Image (cartoon, rainbow, N blue to C red; front, side, top):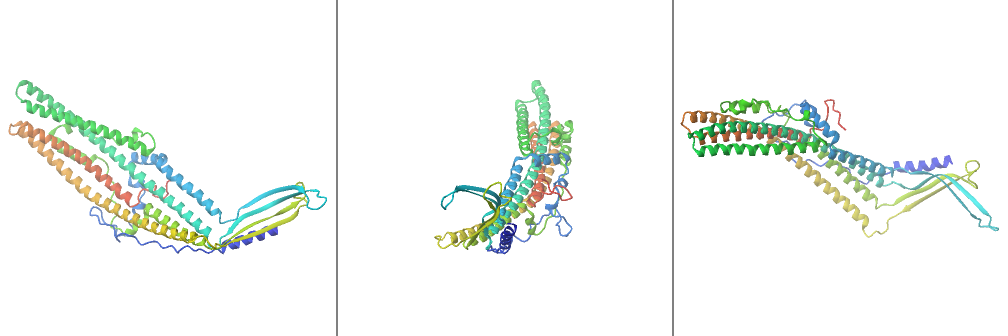
Length: 496
């Protein structure tokens, strides 16, 4: 029995190793994008070979804020979208194992028995018991059909892993964006609160002047309008804070602890309220809003796009489509299947393994397609079209990635310029308010001129905070667009 079983398995193994492949030789398409990424005047080009790739910059290094790091870690542990991406990888790995198992014979241990009358007179009852190992309908993969299907399934697993990386990178960037949005919300709320207090105090003085008959009603109503406008802005800021906090809770997969929220703005309440010091307040917004993120190397070859997981995912899907062509071509060739068994047979179950006789069967079968009404050729044509679709999707992924990188670099440069100009405008409005206050106190300017200067300064300070947030998020956009955020530590270990 052992000799027969070894012979059967040897035939199967040799046939499997001798399988050829009808799949086309895979070649990576050329990048459907310009050879160089767009330049950036904010950062120095990364011309030296020692400059690290953005994809190799760990997120813990790029985001040094301990609060933000805690939020990112919480999101990586609890975010549902990322969990689904991880489970998709596990599902496709299991599917690959199932598909790859077809490359090897399935061995089953069986024991069967039968009892019935004999075919010869006087037709006595006989018992036959058989036990051993069977191989059922194992396909000899002479033309690589099964192997091509296994390679396609393997590529799908790799594509799902790249999709998980994309989800990881997107989650890290989204948490960082939401964190700084909350930080900006706190600044906007603090600015609005202090502006409201300042305007309420000014309104009290104007009300006294109006009651004394030294102020006309028009000036009083204008001041009241400014107070109500500040209340409207405060309500908007509170709503924005609450909505952004809820969005962050969804990203991190649970409640956000108070010690992981952005710090409270450190501004002198009275300084912000006094018009004479408004220029200093505007400067404080720039200096203490949040820590700047580091510049990233630019001016790189477009080959750096290959480090993006979405590009790698599209390439793996292309590899899978290429392998499916081989499976479709092999389906048009003859198939040889083997069914066999090796074991012992006895007249009784109790004597099966004591005095049983060796028994074996070997039943190969050959299936040759003669006429299928063009089904096989259509299968090959469909596989070729799917491969062409995968090539087009790969090209689109490259072009989309190039656009995202170009847009991110442009946004980083222009938002930096915008934030600088916004700061200059806030400082100019602060100086204008100071001069308007002096002119009003000396009787040269009217109350309406003073109120207009106050309104303009408040608007410019709000715009300054918004532009600083946009600049910070533009830096995050560059980091994300160039594939950063996947590596967790400086040692290059990857998070789960």
